[in-house]
Image (cartoon, rainbow, N blue to C red; front, top):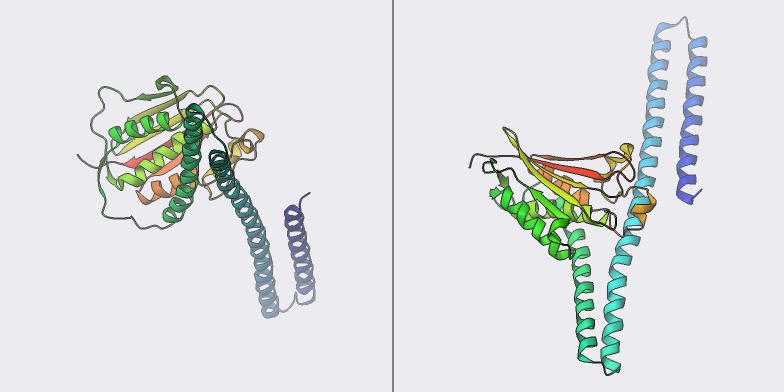
Length: 298
């Protein structure tokens, strides 16, 4: 049992003992003042308030300990995501400075350093976007956004970023689909869809097979991203959208991340009057994330 688990167990035990003591005193008070209505009622109300306060205090302390644990894991993950590419870039630069290398080796070094720089940029960008996503207000005046074209752009970007073959991500839009126009911030919507795609790629098995559907009903556009990856246990489907949260599966721990991607998607969906939810058959059964946004007339 870790230190934080011991703290959680301590506060739960302490709260339970205090509640039990309060109930015992309450029963004793009732037995002593059972014939006096006013002291009896006041005593019951007073002890009920004490018990409620103890329960709320215990729940609050347990949540704060868990939140602190998530923040510590987030800091460790971000530190690793920053230090690893920095160390790699420094090593290649020192090699270029101290040794004579061939043109082929130099091009390989440059390519690796650019990839590490992109990894650094992505990590910093996620942290900054998580801070912006926490604000409820929109950034700038909303504009009409064509979601069919936006999703297509995000799919192409994901293929290029992860060096995937075209067939790795299948984007399906029915031929009869009319215009799907959403009122909002195009940059934030690109971030939301891209995060869903990046998440699907990262947590897929060695063979990336992702299917993206865009469906419409009378009032909303539904963007569904389905993968055949590690899957999500049923009791974790809502928790994955919390800040810093990562599913406690071994396959997930092996993938580096900050626990911010889905939180950003959830925040952007909420700011645009929509929602996002996850579906999965369980561990190893893949996942489906659906982003729903309200449409406006074109």
